Amino acid sequence: MSAPSVQYTLTDDDVAIAWVERGVGKPLVVSTGPMLPLNVGWEPGGLWDRLSQSFRVIRFDPRGCGLSERDGVFGSFHDEAMDLAAVVSELGAPRVALMGYYIGTPAAVIAMLNEPERFTHMVLHLPIPMVGNQILPNTATASPQDEYSELMDGTIGNLLRLGWQYHEESARRALLTIIAPTADEATLRSLSELMHHYPSMNRLFGLIPEMRSLNLRDELRSVDVPTLISIPPEGEGFEDANASFGRDWARRIRGARLLVGRDDTSVLVNGALTINQLAEAMEEFIGIDQQSQTSGQATRTVLFTDIEGSTSMVDRLGDDEARTITREIEQLTHTAIRDHQGVQVKTMGDGVLAWFGAASAGVEAAVQIQSQLANHERYSDVYVRIGLSAGEPIAESDDLYGTTVNQAARIMSMAQGGEILVSDLVRGLLQGRRYRFEDRGVHQLRGFSESIQLFRVEWQSGDGGDSALEGTIR
Image 1 (cartoon, rainbow, N blue to C red):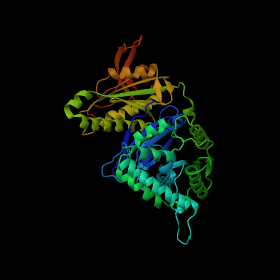
Image 2: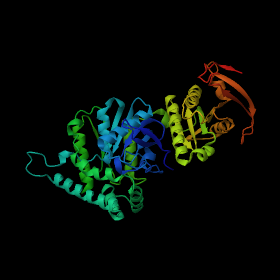
Image 3: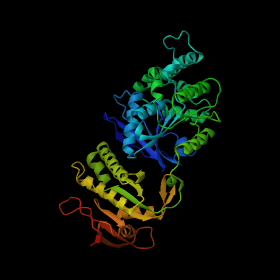
Image 4: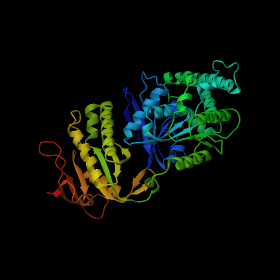
């Protein structure tokens, strides 16, 4: 299974952050820091694929990394917390669950401390060491853990320089072996290739001194969000140090639960036993929405959109400008879907597939999309066509299939730019509601044996403003 479609949001300081989502259920925002690209782990058996079976999983590339803004961006743990907050705001959910993974744990904790009211639960997997692991004033000698941390810092710093500044592949592999000591050869090779150009040099070389100065010990005592900390089983070397660091965090967070892995295989290895153990613990800890457990059929209103004349727009404006407009329209569409409690399934070419639990919500989202485009000075000459159908599509993981989906796509293809067309069933579900329709007649849709009656939603009044939507047919 491929990685989800990429979306963008802006932080308070106007940095563009790339993010993706997959799954249905309670939203779970994941912070992985500058070492794990957002397109990794979605394959069958991967960590994010497994979690998306129970949660709406949201991942993002922090500034200076991957598909997020890189030029002139330095980034820090506090900046990454700002990136995370921007993604949470984009979701529109009142509260979300939060997960910090390894180097992403500091940003997760800082974001939670900044706005604890936005988070229901916090999961920290392999939290990194804090400044307390260094020699403190009035401490005469370093502990073995202090010495280990100092040696590890120096080693990682050298491997980063060799692997990324001097493009030495063996150094990248050596670093990944430290992070995921039980990963197989194929996993190490794949991660090395993916991570070669993932973080910017500025972000990469600022990481080690930032890790050395990390100090959240006092702040952790004020954490009031239910917290689960996951650590590997006791072992030697890096695994034992990670377990020790995790216990250090757990001791300072009031009421924190500690999950000790039964297997030392990294969660970066698809199919690892650790993945299922962690996922099951998170399901029990956070809880699962009933909606995410019903992966079969349920009545839904399906919406398809498409930008009319996108090919000619590319010819007229050029690739870069046309793609910028397309992305902005995708963002406008996503916002409308979110505002009306819809679920965006995926983007396809220049269009979007989404579903809603109520026909009225789907039509209102469609009207919002068309109204905002028509009233936007930049996009007043860009037209989107929208089709809606209702039924019981087949839901598998994060995708929809079946007759209802195909019918919505065919209805959309019958629409003109700026139009919203709906099936007779959608119109019937809106009986008694304040909507006005125009009967567009009976049509034979391609691929369907039975004809269907279509209706156009009259979303504009004569002067171009929003209409008072009446439950009548013309």
